[in-house]
Structure formats: structure tokens, C-alpha cells
View 1: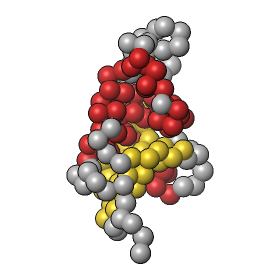
View 2: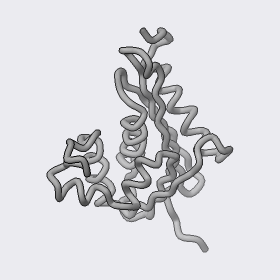
View 3: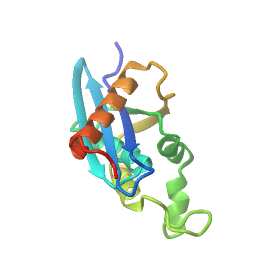
Amino acid sequence: MSERRIVIFCDGACSGNQFGKNWGGWGCVLSCGGQVKELCGGEPNTTNQRMELLACIRALEAVKAVRTPIEVHSDSAYLVSCMHQKWYERWRRNGWKNAQKKPVDNRDLWERLLERVERLPVTFHKVTGHSGVELNERADVLARQGIEAIRGGGAPG
């Protein structure tokens, strides 16, 4: 019998980056024991990287079973590489400065994510985006729905 686990696929998207005003969306799919939960949302004037992080944060915030192993799947190299290579340890040691001695981008979201990750049994997995992985594709659809919800159908500009 296999061990019960929570599987999360999360994705972020951003539209209108070439304009002074843009919209970002995030989406995530959580599954456990045959139950599936989908979440999405959006923000104006943001970045794709912020939306990737926010998708993961929102998914982990929705987890109530704090002892159940969690697998997070993301197509964001930014997110997965940070978790695997533990960039955040160096950032913390250096007062949240990166290797170029500049402030770490998205520190607010990294701190919020790490608060959850350090209290949960989480592993991170890199998935290739837009490669037909069903739940990753669904997370992408949800992220785009988040954009549409915040955008209200208007055009960037």
C-alpha cells in the first residue's frame, strides 16, 4: 500500500509585460486520496516570477494535513532551483543580498514561502512546462484564468 501524499502542481503567468500596466495570474491544483482542489487568483503590475512563487505559497497555505508528505511540481526553474540548491540559506546569511550584493528580488514572497516550507514535509520537482503533463497544464489554465479575473477583460496599456 502506498503512503498517502499531497501532490501539488502550481504555475504562474504574466500578461502585458511590454506595457506600463500588466496582469499576473497564479494557479494550483492540489490532489490527495482522489480529492482535487483548484485555486487561482491574480494581481496587477507584477512579474511572472512573483506569480510562480505565489502559486506555490497559496497551495501550501491550503494544506491542512501538516504531517502528510507534499510533492510540489512546478515548471519554474527559479522556484525549484532555489529549493534544491538552498539559495535562501546564503541569502539569509548575507542579510537577504544576492551574489551581486543587491537585495534579493521577491524577498517578501520568499520569506512567506519559507515559513510554510520549513514547517511541512515538502519536496520540489521540476516539470517541463507545456509538455502535456495534465495537472501542470491545468495549473497553467488556472493561472491564465487568474489573469482574466484581475484584468476584467480590458486590454493592457
